[in-house]
Length: 414
Image (tube, rainbow, N blue to C red):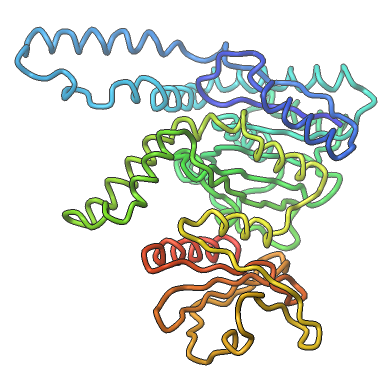
């Protein structure tokens, strides 16, 4: 088994994938699986030197400072560090790749790396590709684009996949592919795999950190048909990207904060502040994330975690949630809370506000309000056994309802 990494923007280390590689190896070992052979497709040495651009910008800012000494220079170009770092890196690398000559060289470099991996392990015929950020756009082109001129390395890349190995899966992390498709006006009906997939459909996992402003889901935009040679799944990482984002969200969830001043403006400011605090780390954090490693390992091995388990873990983290424990009542055939009377469970005054089944058929969720309008959530497995039940007080009611709406949007069967 071969695993081939392609990096994204602002990368300077040849061994950029080492942290994720180590985490994936750990996952494989814990599952008793033979470790894959890994290789990193490094191409950052071809990119432009953005430092030269910022030298010019700093010179212009210094001229402005001398001409207008009474103006606060922090107001001249707000968010300068963010611009020079994350934003400049992403935009700069993106435009560099879209340059015809440099884009061609980048594809050539990645193809040579893949060729080296295959030559070094000729006995291995199973290939899995993991790409990040701008690397996902490059991979997209090499697999799907029909815009290349004769002799482009993308054709050699496809030949390697067609003749030397079997491309089993691709994984994209922090991918802006949907934005580039919009920019280049690529329609969903144009999306066809340009290389053979010896085992249809080719499985594509797209991982998105919720605070990553560059990453977006893509499955719906591709309008994958049932007879397509491509199967796309979007999965989300919900953890806060760093301690600052965590602090911002804790402040935002404090009951008294959102009662101050204009509620709408305060909500927007807190939400934007939390996103800004975590955006950059969210975008680069996939390489160090155990959750990402587990998703990739399960994807490579064909193991998919049941949605019911993902939902329960999310509900357990809802602020103010109180969990109720259960025992099975065999003569009725359902599961009921130990601490509640059975008649209370069937009380007709309880209003059911949500009741939906999960996409993978692993279970369903029900949300109901009692007379005091406090929400109670229950999760059942496919056999209708209760696996989770919890409730919150009025202070945290809106938080639980918002979480249920998010779960419904991502995991509910239409």
